[in-house]
Image (cartoon, rainbow, N blue to C red; front, side, top):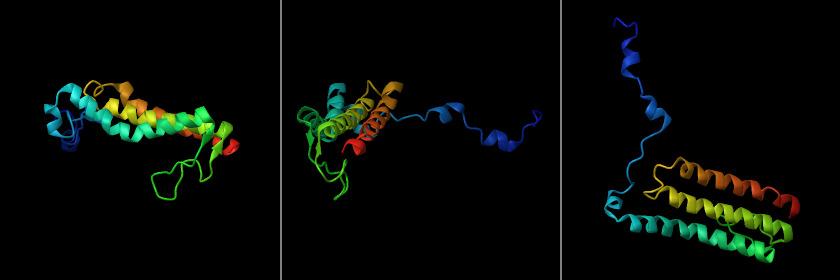
Length: 144
């Protein structure tokens, strides 16, 4: 105790490394580690493609045809852009918003691959794409 610090200060000291970045286990499921890298990567993208592909498809159609039918949200009776179909510029804005949202799912898939495990850019990219999707959806209320 000659340093002038109390016992409590020494006992509850948390390393700065733990505060800045929590260590991520190699994988959520130990069986994942036994998979070949190509199969693990394929599995990551197959899972996220179930969610991301429809959003990108609907967004592409909305941009191409300038028309978007109501897109159901995660809860029954909820819609992403309202219960009425969108036409013209509003459909194009909604289409780009859906594409960004779908791309966020693929960014999540890339984040959980073995190659993307340590990438700071891939940790941030899904959040940036979700924010871009929300920002692109804001003008729809003005045009719709």
